[in-house]
Length: 535
Image (cartoon, rainbow, N blue to C red; front, side, top):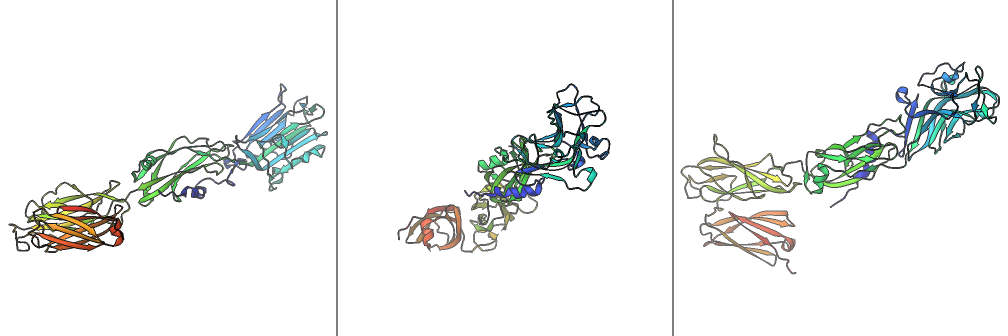
């Protein structure tokens, strides 16, 4: 069976339908001024002060900016940290406090775009160190406070300079980021006092880029669609598919089902990109309804793929399915050949262009107006059937086909018959049986059983008919198969003399070497397997 690599086209389709990320393999987490509705769901405040009274105070006020550069710079808003101004004693060396962003397990922080305001006042020994730190180390560009004693303020897009460019740090490769204040005094403590000494670090907004190198893991699909395909049956309508996926980084964002580049169904997780881990690590089992009607009848490859918060895609689970949504068309060449005064041999031709094989037929005989039709009766896919009309009048037969998916044609073929009363035995005379569509008058059958024999020699098929004394000419129908596929249909007429007739048909070399021929006339048929001829 043919295999298609259609699942590889899914990444481009998912990019159109799902939240944007910076590049495949990373996602961005926003906070405060950079976040929708100015929320903070990713930075957590903490302090390492071991003294009985905490020397640090926090504020969380997004997006309000109060004050400016006045008396209380710690109340600028955003995520801020300051020393406690009313303490008589200093802060011990090594203590720290601030707001920290922690990357999920298996990921790393690659970059940050941010606006912040840091500074100190009356700090003659530069003992206080407010800054942005990556894994505890001050990030380059955050060192403006190290060279000026006593007092200094540093802004990046902060309120005192509206419109100032934001800060940007790249190639961080860190697990944590912290915006806060550290006591790094060489004299055992950092000064705090009731009135004068102050230090602060405030962040008003941030966009953190998280690198997530690991793709999600797709669970084995299940459900009606998958099981129908595994059993080799036909799928039709909308069928259920059970899907699941897990991820060790930012979580699973979506699971998509497609066929040859056409997206059929998608599960989209609820993700929040203000969280360090935006999506759930596991989707659990999700049921999708896959509309097979979006694809034409025939064989297709269904592909399932999962995408995580960073745009990484899983391996593809795929399976070939046979789809059949269209009922077979009506049979063609519906013919009726008289076989006595009230009986007919009814035959038809199956359409050759159907995708789903024809496996059977049904017919219904309807009497003159006002009477009920017979229940549908099964018939071979290509007939023929012997039909006996029970009473005089105009009758008609309807024949429709059934395919391998169990679908029956809605548009049957119909033929009409008229038996006049009283019927006569002289064919063609008034009162005899007639049918429409017609066939040659010479093709009158007999109630006596016919005997058909055949042989093949030198690309010629020889057919002998016996036991037909009352027939002057007989129409023989041929159906030619190669590997169970119909490749030709034709009819020939045998002239009958003294109850016997012979017919010779020239066969092409290809047919003579490979074909099977079914010969049908009246209620009789034989199947001829042509021998492989020597050349």
